[in-house]
Length: 331
Image 1 (cartoon, rainbow, N blue to C red):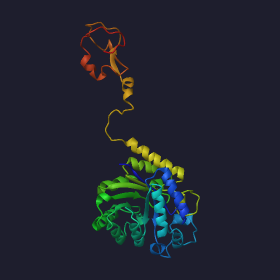
Image 2 (cartoon, rainbow, N blue to C red):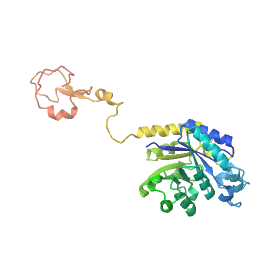
Image 3 (cartoon, one colour):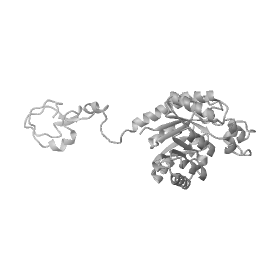
Image 4 (tube, one colour):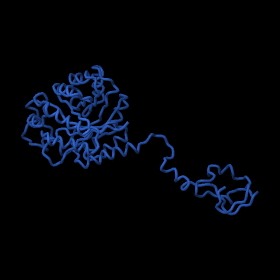
């Protein structure tokens, strides 16, 4: 099964439909399977007293409240329809993460078949229950979560009606950017084993190497933020990939998929011609007469490998030559 690559536009459209469409174009050009935005009502998502995260204070106006920042990044129902239509036209899947109940209802009404649950809502019982009841495919991010909290969230989703086979759990770290020493990529495999469930990775590190490693460790979904330009104003641009980097990540993931192969250890088609060249055969060390006793003194192992295998060495040592041999002739 091919790795499902989600190009996370998030709020990097800065509230502009034009920029959002350009982000869709970049995702298509990179070869991603889906482009994902974020759906929320600022009024429902944060209180007006809520503080920004430290990384948001560094990348946006520190005097501005989280509510004021979020409100400028809202996309209404009309914008969603326009972006979905554009994504459909460009033949890429449109996804969006709902951050409140009103947004869940909107995305469901718009016909989304996959619902992405953000890390911040893994402990939000009514939210999880609402999504679980939709009986759609679910991608669950687990930043900041313990195994116990993941287990509880899965229990709610499945109890509400979502099949386990329709759930993919993403290992994640919510720091933008995530320090390498905090990635803990092996925890992704722990999640998969603990719950016998499909797993993947939502990445907030700088660069693409961790995504490549995640695929090598069995991730079936990769999610990565991207932007038109890291220097743009907004909370997430700085920790996002630029277009050429996104393209490089997709290419690398696809190469790793090919490189992983089927796990059966046999000579590959490309290397089969090398077997006769690189392997060796039993040959005459020097001229041998018919009837001579074959020993280490008159036989040797040399290339090419299209004669008798050296693995038969013990079987021929001590026997008699059945014909004359010239030096280096294959036995």
